[in-house]
Image (cartoon, rainbow, N blue to C red; front, top):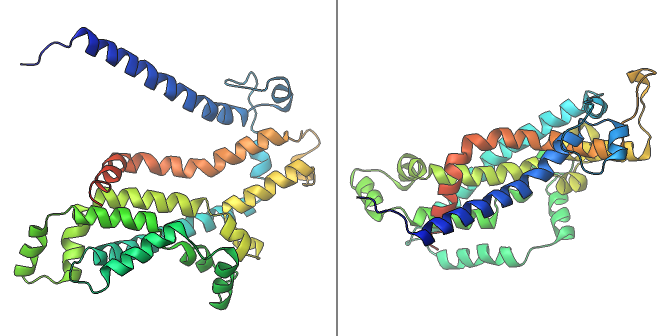
Length: 293
């Protein structure tokens, strides 16, 4: 029988809900301001520093951003890099994480040390560029994937998750004649879907937001991902250097701030679309991956 809550417990629940609601509102208001600001006219944006509901709606900022087919090409590049990069990263991460859980692997402790060492010390910008250049990856999409294919933090989470799986499952599979690769594919991977979905989201967000590597390694503007192109659009809008002849004589250039908000919305929407499908795995995967180190 469920006991009635005490007065102190009820008070705690009220304060807890009130605090969480306040945090949620504080977090949501800037996002709402950015979204609504992207639909605001130049005059209203100049009058009001903070907008939640525009008095006059306009698509001028989005018309400016989508005025060229280049943005659709850049979007295709980003989608391709995100999908292929996430696939490559997850394959390498799962293979390496599973290997590091094997107690009979020679040099396992030393390899684990090297993985943790990269969290504290990295080669740096110039060595990374020289390695990519010597491998002939400049101006290729591989330069956006291979240098960041395995993230040490994500690898440690996957390794820790694999270590939480009961040893008896693998021993039973070996008795049935399954090898290590078969155990990984048929047993470990299906049981690790929450962690895999979580790490996949981490990798996907990282690839989608690829900017610095694209600036360093990609010289061909036709191969720019969406983040680099949107930056160029903001620069052109700020400098008033873009050609607006195609919009007609009635066209009013949107203010710089409105374009920045529209750029944020365009670059964020794809990840927001993907996240609800992975949300049920996200919290569970992140929690279970941190149980055993």
